[in-house]
Every structure is written in C-alpha cells, then in structure tokens.
Length: 218
Ligand code: AP5
Ligand code: MG
Ligand code: ZN
Image (cartoon, rainbow, N blue to C red):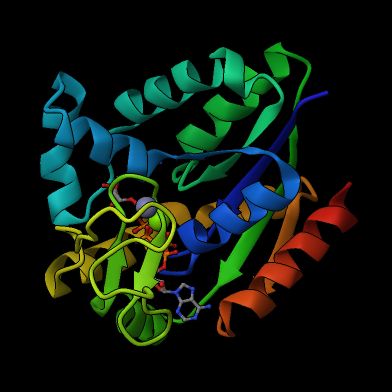
C-alpha cells in the first residue's frame, strides 16, 4: 500500500527543512514542486522557461503545468510506494487532480500536515535563508547556520540565495498563499486528514510533533 503525505504551510514555514528530516525517518520519497521547477529553470528546459516569470514574481505557476509535472513524477517507479509532497497541492484544482489520480490507483492521502507560522516569522526566516541547489538542504544565517559559511553541510555544494527571497516577491507569496492555498486547510479538514503543528519553535521540536502527528494518522 502506498503512503502519500502532504506538507502544507506558508512560504518559509519550514516545509523543506522538515521534509528532509521526515523523509529520513519514514523512507518516503521527498517531492518538492518548487525544487522541481528550480531545476527546470537551471537546465533551461521549456517548462523552466514557462515557470520562471511566475516564480520570480512570487506567483503560482499555472495549474495545468504544475499538475502534469507532478503527476508524471508520481508515475515513475521510485514513487510507487508513495511520497512526501512539499509545496503541492497549492490550489483546490491541484488537490482535486491529486485525489482523482490517487483514486485511480485505489490510493489516498494518509495525512496533510499543516505547519502553522505567522507572517512576521516568515519575513524573519526568508530574509536570511541560504539553500543548497544540489541536495535541497536549507540553512539560515542566524537560526541554523551551516558549519562552514557558504557551503552545504550535507554535500559541500556552494549555497545560494533564491531569486524569490526578495521583499516584494516574499510579500506576494504570502498574499498568494492566503488567497489560493489557505482554502486547502478547510479542504483537508473536511476529509479528516488535517493535522496542525505549531511551527514557531525550533526545528527539532517541530519535527518531533510532525512525526507524532503522522503516526497518529495511521
Ligand atoms: P516553493 O519552493 O515551494 O516555495 P514556498 O512555498 O514559498 O516555500 P519555501 O520553500 O520558501 O519555504 P519552506 O516552507 O520550504 O521553508 P524552509 O524549510 O526553506 O515554491 C517556489 C515557487 O515555485 C512558488 O512561488 C511558485 O511560483 C512555484 N510553485 C511551487 N509549487 C507550486 C505549485 N504546487 N503550484 C504552483 N506553483 C508552484 O525554511 C525557510 C527558512 O527558515 C530557512 O532559512 C530555514 O533554515 C529557516 N527555518 C526553518 N525552520 C525553522 C525553525 N523551526 N526555526 C527557525 N528557522 C527555521
Ligand atoms: Mg521549500
Ligand atoms: Zn547540499
């Protein structure tokens, strides 16, 4: 039986940070649509070129492109036992498309884990973020600095700052989250899948709560 878990929360909530930890504990494949789009942008694919102007403005890439990218990825061999979805779904259309695709394989969402964080905390976190373009690890200048400045602890690659971590794009991402993604909280609450975790504590405390929430959902 496959297991599908969704990580939901505003930009900067810690979805990527927690996904790496949860994937290690559960063995689930971590799929982050933001990372997938950024890889396409780096490789200058057609999809990357189409996605980039939305990402730079802090807006969502159109559902049509996002849904087909994610469902194609879920159909590959290494995703057959399920996955940990980070940053997808982000609209009601995406959630419905995912439900329909899983239903076709007699599968369903095991749990949606909401990482609750205020807008003020998001602004503090995204201002100082450094990301690894190779393995997806995430650091923060103050809250979780890498052991060697500018280098990834896990794979030594040079860390980068994301193009969309500029004040204007961060504000737009927060607005887009409130308008287009927050309705998914109700969507998953209605189906009894939602587990809410207080994200405004250290990463270890948040991680422990997420694991406990996931176990209680089984
Ligand atoms: P995406 O890459 O998903 O960005 P996001 O949702 O804005 O979320 P972030 O990655 O910014 O934050 P996070 O929650 O992962 O936090 P992190 O762990 O890094 O999407 C980017 C773009 O791609 C979108 O804007 C859109 O254009 C497009 N896109 C992607 N998916 C899409 C979809 N489904 N549909 C349409 N378009 C899509 O942590 C943030 C910082 O905080 C780090 O510095 C970290 O070290 C620090 N931190 C983490 N936890 C803590 C803690 N507990 N205490 C203190 N600091 C912490
Ligand atoms: Mg992320
Ligand atoms: Zn790395």
